[in-house]
Image 1 (cartoon, rainbow, N blue to C red):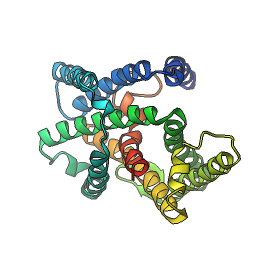
Image 2 (spheres, helix red, strand yellow):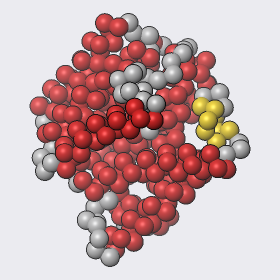
Image 3 (cartoon, rainbow, N blue to C red):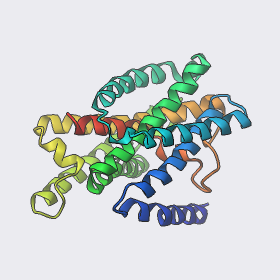
Image 4 (cartoon, rainbow, N blue to C red):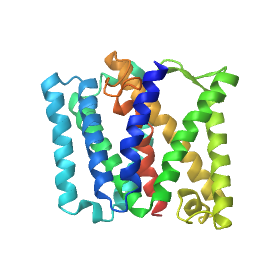
Length: 277
C-alpha cells in the first residue's frame, strides 16, 4: 500500500508541478478542471446517483466550468461570493456535524447533490483565482492545509487521547487538531519572518493576514485551520452515510480526488475571502 501511495503521489506531482509553475494559467486551470470534474462524479456517487447519472454530472460540472471560464468568469471580482461562502460554511459545519451521519440522509437529495456540486465548483474558482494572485499566495494556502494535516497526524499519534468526532472520524483527536494548529502558526510565523528579510515575494496569505494586525491575523488563521478540519469531517460524514471507505479508487493508494481535496473545498474560498477584505 505504501509503495502504491508513493508511486501515485510521484505521478501526480510530475503532472501537477509543471502546470503550477508555468507562467500562464491555462495548463493549471485545465488540469484542475479535470480533477474537479472527477470530484463532481465522486460527489454524485456518494449522494445516491447511479453510475451513468454520476458520470454525466461530473462531465456536466467540468463543461459548465469550462464555459464559465470561456465567458470570462475567472476575470471577475468574486469577493461578494467569498463573503457569502464564509457564512455558508459556518452554518453548514454546524448543521452537518450537529446532526451527524444519520442526519445527512434526511436532507433533501437535490439539496445535498446540487449544493455539494456548487461548493466544489466554488473551490475550483477560488483555486484558480488564487493562482492568478500569485504562486506564493496559492502555495501558502495549500501548505496551510497540508501542515495542519501532517502536524495533526503526528500530534494525534503521539499525544492523542480525546476523540474529536468519534461517530464521524474516530481517528481524529483534540490533541491532533491542536497540534495541527500549532504547526500552522509556527509555519506562518516562519514565513512572515522570511518575507521580512527579503526571502519571499511578500504576497503570501500570511503576510496579507499580518497586514490586518496581529489579532485579526491570528483569528483569520485559526478560522482557516478550523475550516480545514471541518472540510475533512464533512467528507468523512458523507462517506459514512453512503457506506463508503473512499470517495472512489481513482488514485491508487489514496482513494479519490475528494479524499485528497476535502479540506481545500472550504479553505480555498475562505482564503480568498480573507485575502480580499
